[in-house]
Image (spheres, rainbow, N blue to C red):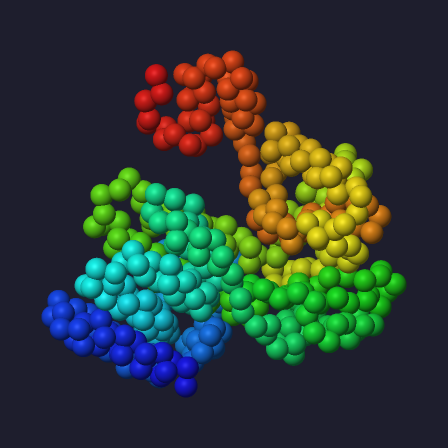
Length: 409
C-alpha cells in the first residue's frame, strides 16, 4: 500500500543519506527511520488516507468543540495505539525530506538543492493534513525563521483533501435535524458544491417554501483527527521550547492557534458570529451576511440562506472598484467601531451578489477587538501622523505588539 511504499522510500533515502554515502554520523538516523518505516507500513496508505482513516478510537467519546490542551492530552493518553500509528505516519512522511536534507548538509549542497527541498517539504506537509498545513502557515509569518525559497513554498500550501462520502453527510444532517434530510429538503445536490478539509457544502431547497439554502457539514471525526495532530505537534513544541534560546514559546503559539482552529470546527459558534455580523453590517446597504437558519444549525451542521453571486476577485463587473471601497469601510467599522472583526477575508469568502452587493461568507474565524485596542488603534494613527514616537510605542504595547513588561520610555 501507500504507507509501505513510503516506508521503502524512507529506508532508501536514509541509506543514501547515511550508510550509502559513508557518512557514519547519519547511520543512527537511518536506523531510526527504518524502525518508524516498519511501524508505519501497517498504517493506512496514500495521500490523506492515513489522515482520514485512522483506526477507530477505543470508545465513542468525542472531543469537545472548545480547545483545552490538557483535555486533548488526557483524551489521547487513553488512546496510545492511535497516537503511535499517527506518529509513525508523520515520521515516515517526513523521513524522505529529513534524509535528503541530511545528505545535502553532508555533501555541501544545501544551497544548491534548497528550492527542490522546499518543494519536497511542502508536499510532505500537504499530505499530512490540515493541522500541519495551518501550523506551517502560522510559522511562515516569522520571516526570520525561513529562507525565501521555503517561505515561497509555504505560501503555496493548500489543505487539499477529497470530499467525504455523501451518505455520511446525509447521516450527519439527520442527526442534527432529528429527521431525514428528505423530510426537510425537496431537493439537495447530489455532490457537494464545495469541499475542504474541515467540511463540505451542499445546496438544497427547503420543503416549507423557504427557498434555497447552503448546508455545511463538518467532516465526521475531524475534531479527533485534528486534535491528535495538535497533540503531537504541541508535544514537539514543548520539547523544542526546552532546548531553544529564542524568546518565542512555541507551545503557547500552538495553543493560541489551536483555539482558533477548534473555533472553526464549531458551527454553532459560527452561526452566532454570523448573526451578530449580519446585524452589525445592516448600516451598510452595500454589504450583507448570509442569514442563518437556526432550526437547521448545530455544532456539526450549519444552514444558511443561499446567496447567488460570484467571487469578488473574479468579477468583471464595472462596480468592483466601488465595492472594494465599500468592503474597506465595512472592515473599518468592524475594527474601530463594533470590535467584532471578520478574520478570514480571503477571496473565496467575499462574494459579489447578483444585485450588486458584497456578501461576507464564513464567520468561523472572528476576532474581538477590545475598546482599549480600538482607542489605541485610533491614537496610533494620530501619533504616527504627528511623529510622537514615545506615544506610538505605548500604543503598540496596548495592541499587544510589545510585551507588557517592555520598556517603551
